Each structure stands twice: as structure tokens, then as C-alpha cells.
Image (cartoon, rainbow, N blue to C red):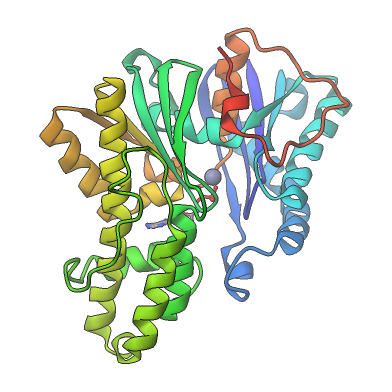
Length: 346
Ligand code: KG4
Ligand code: ZN
């Protein structure tokens, strides 16, 4: 069974071909340079860029997979959540292809695609379903931060999420305050690796709260006040590294401690992590140490599948189709505010 998946929920135009559960191709056209000029993703520009990239990326995915359009059995696309003008491009191109080729179409929840991405074995290019264990999953991206309990494949329940900014948004916004280019997350990660995480003290929001929700907007504000008081810090490269390391330490500590707390509360022994922020080296290292100390197994999405991609979309679609998912009707549109709870398949 050949599936074409398309992803365009934010600033990455991606397509992938999955054949019998194996990823054959997954090109991504990134818009990072375009949005860097504005310090964040501009939805209207993202949509225009998706429009010019989507067909070449689909063509590239088919060519690299050596699969003709008429050999596709299903077409899948991200249906939500995401930026409406951006989502519409990939979703409607996918629906139109399905219509023209007379193939079934399925829409996928972007977070659900991230949720199962840690189970993609990058060597084999397929889901390592035999290794599946009930787990608590941390999804950390630019738009969302949530903890999800996955009791069995395709059955999950959201345990907590951010009540304001997402962790990636916090990285990007604090980086902007410090004068770093967009997207700030990876830049901060690089600078933090050379800095002292204990140099400056920033709040650990909601850490003392026994719940599993997150809040990152206050942290951003405290960084803003701190820099206003000490503007000289950002001029000195070693102090800037310390500042990045200290901000990162605060974000990472909250993410890791809450994730471990969720696992202890639910009694699962496996933790997974996905989404752009799960590329962060400080987070990966800290999760590894915390899991080792608790005797828990850790699976973090492979670097290639952390940030937005279409392989995770096509592979989840394949799994759902195998589990009996039905094609969607042509009247259905995007679901920009689609929450993961509503994506329950079980
Ligand atoms: O999952 P993703 O590609 O897109 C969304 O669905 O949001 O995540 C993008 C986010 C951005 O906020 C970016 O700064 C952050 O992930 N990010 C990082 C790192 N790499 C990407 N944050 C911290 N450290 C990184 N290494
Ligand atoms: Zn994402």
C-alpha cells in the first residue's frame, strides 16, 4: 500500500511516500529564512510560500520514492491544528490529488503525528511497533507543549498542557529579547552548550504546582526585566552563553520534572518526546539522566523526525488505515484548532 503524506501546518512544506509502512522519501522545504526577517512566522507569507513549494515537494517525494502518482493507494495530509492559511494549502492540494486520482483521502492530527514519531526507527524507516510500551509522551514544539498518556497504540489521553506560551515559543521569544536570530531555540541551544546553567536564577513556572500543566509566559517576562536591568550581559559573549544556559536550564527543568511526575502518577515506565524542542541537547541529556535515575526507558524522536515533516503524517495515516480508519468525505475542511483529545482513535 502506497501512501502520500503532505504537511503544511506552519513553516515547513513537506511530502513523504510510505510504502507498506516504510518511508521511501520525505523531502522538506523550510521557510525559516523567509520568516527570520520578521522574527516569527507570518501566516499569510507562509501560505504563499507553501503554494509555491507544495507541488515541487510532492513531485520530489514521488521521484525519490520511484512511485508514480497513479500507483498511490491513499493520500494523507495534516488537517490541524496549525495556522489556517498554511494548513489549507497542503490539505486542499492533498484532497484535490485524491479527487483527481480517485483515491481515498485521510486527514491527520499534527500532534498525533508528533506523538508517534519517537517510534519511527530511522534506520529501518518504519514504526517500531513491536517495541511499543505504554508511555508518557512530551510533545514540545513552537506551538504546543503537552503531556500525553499513550496506554496502547493509537489510544491516548492528554494529561496536561501549557496554559499560555509553548516551550518553543518561550525559547524563540526570549532569544529575540536577547537579540538572537529567529528561530531562537536552536541558536540558544548552541550558545547554552558553552555556558553555565547556574549563572543566573530564573523562575521554574508551575513546578511547585502538583498538576501537569505548564506556563512559560512569566519566564519570558522575567528574562525581559533581567535584561533591562543588565543590558551589558548581551554584549559579552561569555555572559551571553551563561544567560542562554540559565534560561534553557529553567525551561528544561520544568519540562523534565513534570514529565517524570506524569510517569510516576500514571505508573508507566517509558517516556517519549517529540516536536522541535526535543532536538534541544540540554533537554535530551536531562531527560536521559532523569530516566536513568528512575529506571525508566526513554525514546526521543530521531533528529530528522523532531521538527515538522511529512513522514510522521504518512506513517500515522498508514497505521490508522491498517487499524480500519475510513476515508474522509470531500466536504470536510481543515481543523485549525483540532485538540488532541478530539483526535482519540480508540
Ligand atoms: O515541531 P516544530 O518544527 O514546529 C511546530 O509544530 O511548532 O517546532 C519548532 C520549534 C521552534 O520554536 C524552534 O525554536 C524549536 O522548535 N526548536 C528548538 C530546537 N530546535 C528547534 N528549541 C530548542 N532547542 C533546539 N535545538
Ligand atoms: Zn509540529
